[in-house]
Image 1 (cartoon, helix red, strand yellow):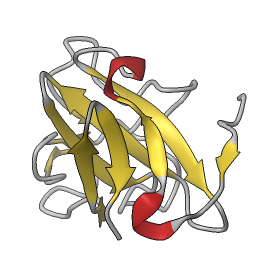
Image 2 (cartoon, rainbow, N blue to C red):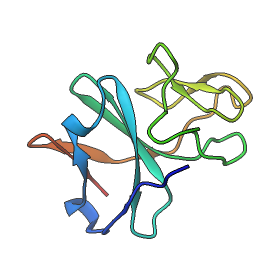
Image 3 (cartoon, rainbow, N blue to C red):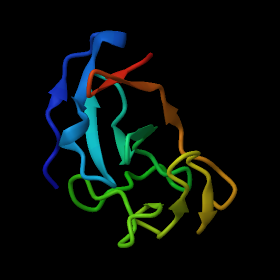
Image 4 (cartoon, helix red, strand yellow):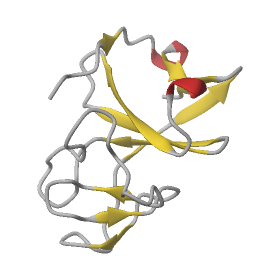
Length: 118
């Protein structure tokens, strides 16, 4: 699988991507400096950031670049074991880690850009 480029870690000044770079709805894998892999989900003008690690076994969720959602694009999907997560909360509602959550990443929208907020 092709890895996303590693962005320079500028803390809260790190631009992850433009909002327009993410399908609506859709997701985008991100790598920043030496931090763990992360991803951003877009749903309209809302964005949610999570670590790209399934709480079940610590595998990445995507099976190909930027493929983080179910076919219907209504939930986040772990491609390894089929766990389903809510976009807004990261809560697993179905699968082997039901009741557990994805680890959130603090992000913000600033002038049409998704920024790291931690």
